[in-house]
Length: 271
Image 1 (tube, rainbow, N blue to C red):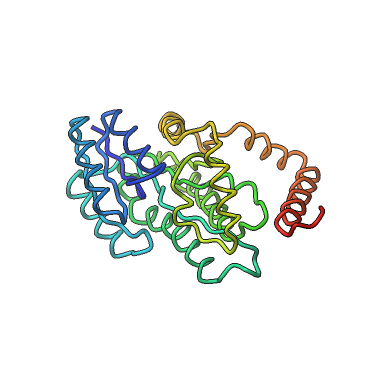
Image 2: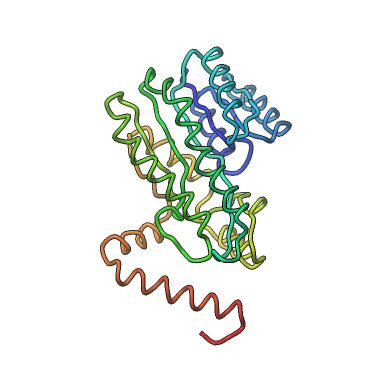
């Protein structure tokens, strides 16, 4: 039976991933700061699928907790077949408005949380020739205004993943990076924003998305199993990313005009 560790696995996309992998008869470790709900989910998945699913408390910024989790997984499972660094947070605000503590909070969780996971669990993945899956975002590829902290953190996850794609290839570890656009999740529940409108806009875009967390979980499972590096889940945003790559001049004109219109709308002035 294969084994997967999922950070942030007690809610949102992490929960959808935990459910999907368990349904494929994988043992699942849910690592999260939500102790009560995490334990209930692990128990439920174990009973439903007759697999070894368990919960471990994990603050992804705490190296000592990562070291403890590594020892637990190695002792309980004697190995690991896949690590999904999913835990993350969101923040928004113009660069001269966002509080630096919120910028650092975003970077600590979204970047160092992933770095910690890769550092502590790569040795087990080398032994199993397993899968390393880092959850970034289309915000790591398309950098819209007012999202400097989030964009920077997710771009760093893409860069880290690309580095490890080649670095771990000699060990036959398959590395993937997930870059979804908006979908229904609980990301805005903890979002830090300098302007309430940013959270409102993000929530509306999530609610309108035709792509669900369950859809993304299935694609992650399928694409990572095939060894696909970049996992893109939204067609429109993928095409916009291709526009950026092949027609950067047009792309930058579009995003500058979009920013001007958004600022004008927020200020009540004509664009």
